[in-house]
Image (cartoon, rainbow, N blue to C red; front, side):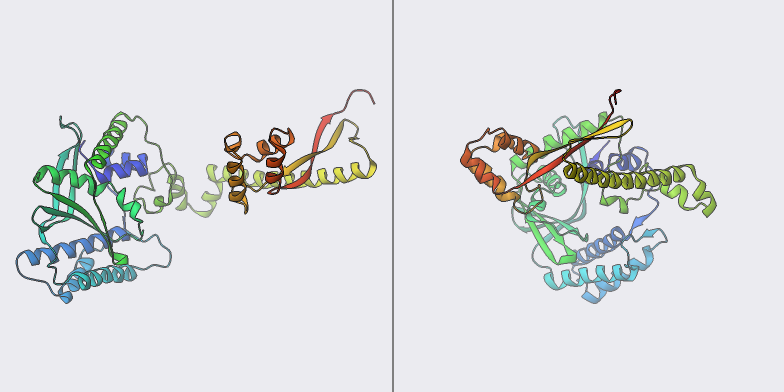
Length: 396
């Protein structure tokens, strides 16, 4: 198999989706409206730069008219909108705004000379040619002799950090291809246009960066080639997946949605889930009632001055033990507590900062008194009840 950045990212995202798309080769039933809009924007920019190459610059009005024509021509009933409250016209307007802002920023488009549009590249990650890669560069350009820019146009709503850009693999793969095609090139710069935000990001990769990416990618391809199972990996991206109706994580939903009300309510899986819900709710109610009874037993034992309360067949032992409670992982004061322990040189002994282990270290006097007092300032002293039910002894 020849791989691409998108194929590899699909596997990273969800091996099951990778299997559907590239092993089983199942055609996608739906197309997300975001991908549809992105395709129309890319086609419009390709036409814009093609006209410039032939010295027939396209006006802003003509660019926008072309975009709308392509939208109307390519629109189909299987374009899917996931985001609630959004309409096709709103996505259409968003794509138009991307083009207008790009046009305003770069017209008359004389910053560089275009070398290729949707430029196909193929290359190997290894000298033997075993690990083959391919891709299409949105635009390849030369701003000066010995310099090449690799451009990528994004219409996604995600706004990246510079670290995200520096870790992006796709254009780094394209740099590998360009270096082989034009070895005399002195500099290669990777350029991303996040069109929704009218923002440009740039990054450069060293030989060491590319070597590390080669090793990582070869290892990933070896993993894919040897895989016998392709598990589902659920994430927020599942909402946009074209294979949800086939996926083990969602197939039951699609199989039961079309059932009549009576069939749905009697479908075996639905019945079992509803039963489990009922049992879970009962368990929660029982848990709350158990805690209420334990609290009442504690009050009773303290009032009567006893440690064990007896019934016909069982007894309950009741004790109070000393306990220091400290801020949890997400509680206020946690960071200051951790820093105090680090400053005292005791961090390694409670590096996970488990509250039980910390309390145990203090109760056992394992630390110096000064450190104990400093750490205790972050906690609250409590007496926690220990209440446990036992069978009664045979004797009365």
